[in-house]
Amino acid sequence: MFDTFAGKDRIDMMLRRPRRNRKNEVVRSQTRETKLSVDNLIYPLFVVDGQNHKSEVKSLPGQFRLSLDHLLREVEECMALGVNCFDLFPAVDESLKDQMGTYSYSSKNFYLKYIQAIKNRFPEALIMTDVAMDPYSSDGHDGVVRNGKIVNDETLEVLAKMSVAQAEAGADIIGPSDMMDGRVEFIREALDTAGHTDVSIMSYTAKYASAYYGPFRDALDSAPKFGDKKTYQMDPANKREALVEAELDYLEGADYMMVKPALCYLDVIHMLKEEYPIPIAAYNVSGEYAMLKAASQNGWLDYDRAMSEMLLSIKRAGADVILTYAAKEYALLCAKSAH
Ligand code: PBG
Image 1 (cartoon, rainbow, N blue to C red):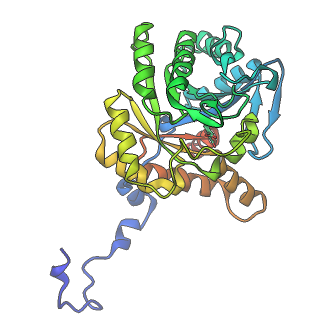
Image 2: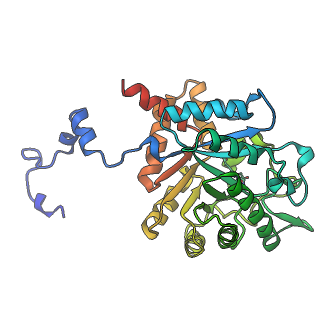
């Protein structure tokens, strides 16, 4: 393709000068290949039972555990900035956790009441929920533990009950983050049987056993009480295995496929985007956000620019949708630059 240049004196006649397409902002924005919009973002929010509670997560500066009053205010502010989709994560009191995670689908669960309250107040907000046992499990694992092992099929029953309870409360998108085998189909059938055929599933398709979830586990106090999550979350060394997970999720009826974390797995995002005709999501996880915050607090890099570049790179790799703790900050930045 570059043969036309062969033999030319490249000093006298540089036919192709890529800098011409960078000469000013109008040209640059006209020819920009990737554009990131606030529409692409989902904002994860941590919620806690109670009133007038807003506590910052130490390892996630700028992110808070919110009681309902603060949550509604936050949602309202975000929607005014164009952030319309929220993924909620509950911080559950230790006394309510048990081996089977029963509080997750109990009618007393504050998380379910919060979903209902947001949908009542802001029917046009898109609410995504997390499906996994870890915030509710006394073992801190995403599945049922028997003799020190995480058992798959028994967990599916709990996940299905949790999903139906969340759909009943008004959730628009169910996000199974547990990595049990067969859960998308199991949840889909449970939702459909309960009449929730319109409720979507965003499957955590390729969720890796990552060190980057650390700050999130601080936020929810949900770290595993023993061992690690390597028997269900994927090995960071594996790329082709993501195709096995993706094929299953696709056949089982997932509406979106997610890769998580995002930054260390851009190749996986790109691969799934090439291979599958459904929207690809990427979770820009807590550790990725915390790294930028820490560096910028030390004056080592410009937060706004580094954060924008990070989100752009995830989109460029192929993500249609990005879950990020920077969603509101990015929307604020867009609002500022529009003036
Ligand atoms: C748990 C869950 C985790 C995250 C989302 N859902 C942590 C884990 O698997 O231990 C991580 C999100 C983040 O780090 O921002 N099912």
